Length: 241
Image (cartoon, rainbow, N blue to C red; front, top):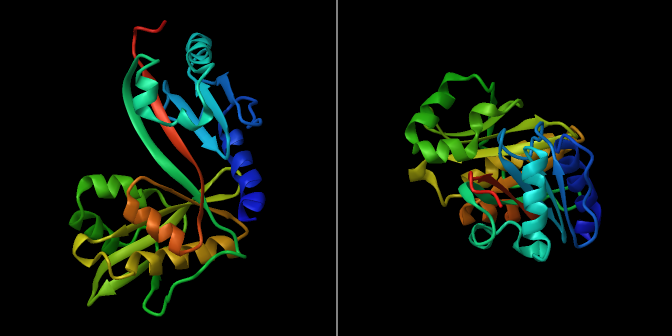
């Protein structure tokens, strides 16, 4: 199964980002204090569920102990559910959850890339696309953070869809995809994302698609990505118990 090939790689990736020794173990939740964690913003709690196991990083030992007590009897399937966590933890902010999906060469289904061209990540035409979309869409896509070339589709001379990836530690390629609002539903996201995924796979990287919107998740599935888990970041309020 595709999970048998991708799940261990995805788990190694996120365990390596935790900043302290931690592992996905069975159907269990493992909590570790790690102020250097890359699972979440500094000072936050990072939660990553992959398969039936969960790792959690806390900003300090006090927060880690609070989390261990609170989630001791919680099913792993509930660990990235904000509504459930709010009932047992003093949360004052939440980011996510986002679905984590991965793809390999054997299951990749490329789209028609005949109209796709490649531009540098610093190309001025990308700034026009970013200015044409709502700020939340631009932030969600993360296109300004890519380290790869950017794959684009144009309407006349204007870039209307773009994709690239950011190289992460652990040989992962974190995908960024953005389409102008008036051009959505035409398969452009799949075309540019497919070109980016193809390059990532040719480079020996693990393509990662992290998304919240259903439309984005559908594009990933169309390209052969398998949803293996989810990620959530939460900030504990002052009333820890």
